[in-house]
Length: 260
Ligand code: ADP
Image 1 (tube, rainbow, N blue to C red):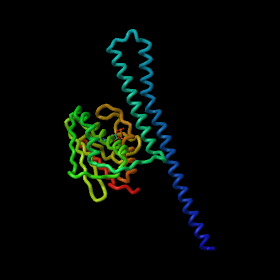
Image 2: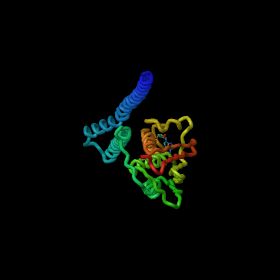
Image 3: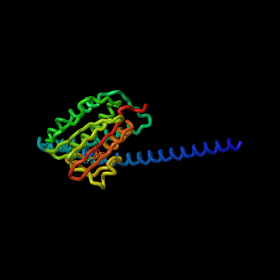
Image 4: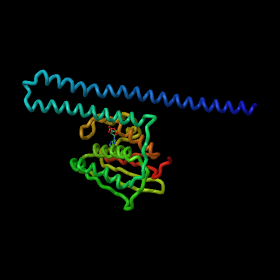
């Protein structure tokens, strides 16, 4: 009976430990949700207010509008709506990734081929900004077991940031390497860099260094937290090295075969 009591005590201890962990997880989710709601109303109040005021102004005075004034005001409305939509999309994506029933769809993919296609989509945007994108890929194709949609969303985010935070006439280098178990992708830019004070926090939800990026787009701070989540869902890791005014390198290591 003593052994039995001991066994029960151990089980009880184990259960209360698990309960405490779950309580902590729940408290964290509640904390993040509260923050999310606060950020949502805070960030949308301004642009929606602008859309409302400008459309009201236009309706009240429409007969006196010159084409020039109309264009100017419509541009303001367009920018505010664009930011609101981007913000809602980012929040939507973030919530989707946090859901406990979120499922990944792993499949075998030719990784270099897959990455090359993603890079191709950025060529015109980079060219417009006079930024050169170089790839440094191994000659032999790499097979990896990944969720194509999620991983391309994640790489799009990192590449998009590299372009947004890089000034014209600079270069972005994307290199791929593999070792026995992993495929390693490095995205190196010669952009504005991130100070050592900010660097530890850039993967946190809603963390932004400046309100606006170099190309005057308002920063939201959800991109990199989603990136980190997707890398983790691939059982991988993401590291960043950066120096202010010199550039940043994001290094993503993902196992080629997933532990299913
Ligand atoms: P967002 O792009 O919506 O602002 P992210 O989560 O993608 O949010 O990035 C968080 C912050 O990290 C950005 O606001 C920016 O300050 C910084 N950052 C991200 N990528 C880079 C980069 N390649 N170069 C310089 N700063 C960057």
